[in-house]
Image (tube, rainbow, N blue to C red; front, side):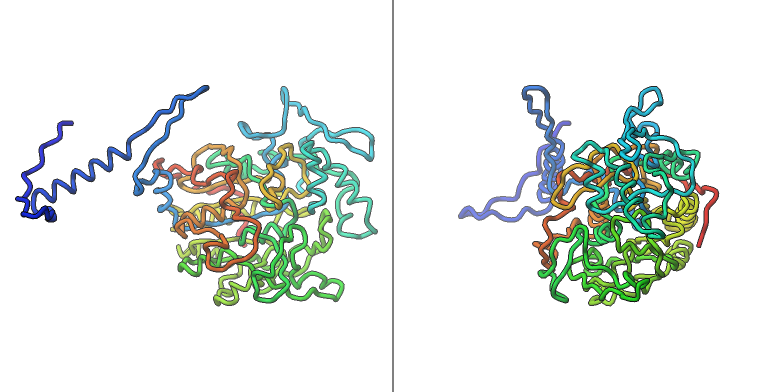
Length: 500
């Protein structure tokens, strides 16, 4: 390109005073600066070093990568959190995924069975009702076994043998099924979502523990226990035993005292910046897992007004102080919002026991429920601006072969399935990034909060959490799962859906 000469500048006054450019010369200066900035933004330096060539792109401060700038197309984020399944138990044989190690279709791994003095390879299990295994912090440590990933059967057998008759931990079968896996024959809709949209095969639960800590992480990036009501600084790390909601112990007539979750949660930032949110609770039951190592638990009642292990937000100080308790609603309101095109910016959906896939809940019932939720979104006017994140809160004691990465003192925990469903989700893509449910919080912050983090140093409400989870260098970026230049995917309405 041949650059034109600038128009003649205006005469310079005596004394060296520099006047502001006017008229044609001023317009040329503006244009020249713009061209210079664009050129600078395109500069790429190649550094040649031993073993390779490294490209460093130098961008002007205003330059935004296409993948990030496209995030403005996302107006609604829906997190559907199911229960207690490992990645290998649902997608261990999914083509292209980091699944169960096999050779010629035969598993090459075998997990010790102490009760029988043998080992068990992963096997196809068509059973609709599973037992799973214990899934507390000590069970996670034993299952991982320093990276050997060989403690699953031993933990399940120990849970079944060390309990009294009729104890919830004994609710499973006489033999364990933690080595069993499902495939497209049993969960065709989940596999269809993975094929049509994006499957994440390195999604880990955010901490190595059970449902309550996982759901606390889902909305606040921390699991803690606070000693002084209303004082975030009184909270201390509690990976396994945060303060329990009052539904615990109702079966024995000794309900726990209401907890005080005084640390900062994501709704505080959403409310402060005027971002709408809803936490939708399926009226029904949830497990009363007072024994965190139990494989399954007796149910207690749940609805939008009963805080519980799947519905912790009512006991966050921020939610009460900001007058946001009304945002915790019955699931029927979600279906109405999806139909009317009035979904909030951020939605979390909390199941009931029967549809949760938490053993002994039926796999087919959970899949039908999730399909109904996705169909409702796809059939409504908000589909073209929505990102759905579907995952399972913990591994439920089921086998997985991938060793969780070391992140900080709290996690990650074991690997769970993760699926991204959106008109802009990459089609037929498998995301191999290291992820956890922390990535959902990070994505919400990037889309709606200009990158603000749950960071005690910057969020205006300090608490002593160990670190800023979204800032972990190991954590991948969910923006990578979207292609905002592709032709948006049309709705894929799947059969066998159940709407509640």
